[in-house]
Image (cartoon, rainbow, N blue to C red; front, side, top):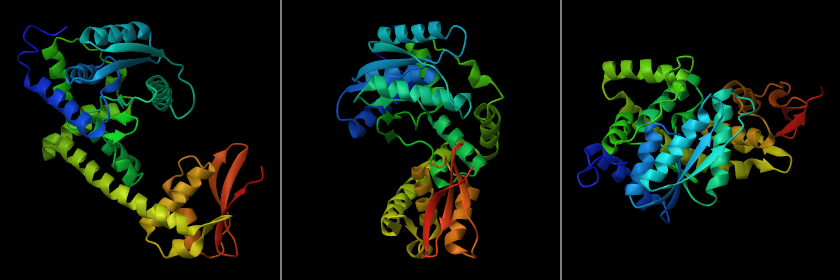
Amino acid sequence: MDRPGALSGRSRAQQELIGAVRGFASTRLSGPAVCVGLSGGADSLALTAAAVRAGLQVTALVVDHRLQAGSADVAERAAATARELGAQAQLLPVDVTGGGGPEAAARTARRAALRAAAGNRPVLLGHTLDDQAETVLLGLGRGSGARSLAAMAAWTPPWGRPLLRVRRAQTRQACIDWGLTWWDDPHNDDPRFTRVRLRHEALPLLDDILGGAAEALARTADQIRADADALDAMSAELAETATVPDGLAVVPLAAAPAALRTRVLRRWLVAAGAPAPASRVIGAVDALVTDWRGQGPVAVGGDTDDRLAVVREAAGILVLRRLAR
């Protein structure tokens, strides 16, 4: 599968990818056995090749979402290429169902299939610096807070992302240098998807205006993630202090900075079944702590038949109540 001489005289792109995988493996992994989530695209294909050449024992996991005509053939070709590269390969057909839109449903199905097939092995994903920059821009557009702007971590077991400092152009060049033919998902060029417009319109424009925009956004994500991790640790201590048998005590929450208090409230609501509470919901619950004027319950979501609301009781405790249908 390699071009003649590709192994004896590696190109710069090949060396960059192999080096990225070796560096990741030496600092994050406890053994050589890994899985790679292989779509057949250039990023995951280059990652598979680099992981094999970095000396890892690679099993390529190829998820067939069965959403497009010919998807089984694409999956079979990707698996065959992985085997030619020296990896093992396993096909994982899935059923894409559930809410949140087609992208979210496909991601949920894919992650579940990868987890089940990998067992105790880490799963390496082909996200690049470009993907990281796009994720930061999506978070900015949604206004969903620091954790969203922190984007993707290089290592969140079992998920590993060795290529977060590698540009997408490098993965494509490495595939060309290795003589690999990749598959281009037509969804990646469909302007109906926000990420596609960011990729083809917004990021090139930002690069033209600012220069190095993708790299700057990725660095921003690293810095924000470090801050967010520290705030999460401190908010966990606040949650322990504020938690009482029936809910959350108002006094320690009111004395804490907003960055910690709102994290405690969000985690508490999510644990109780509120689905990804929006900023306005968190703000309304926070007002029960910091701007108490006797206001009534704050609806925070939940299942259709089991709606939840937060109530501030006279004893100064926030509690969750079920709303009558």
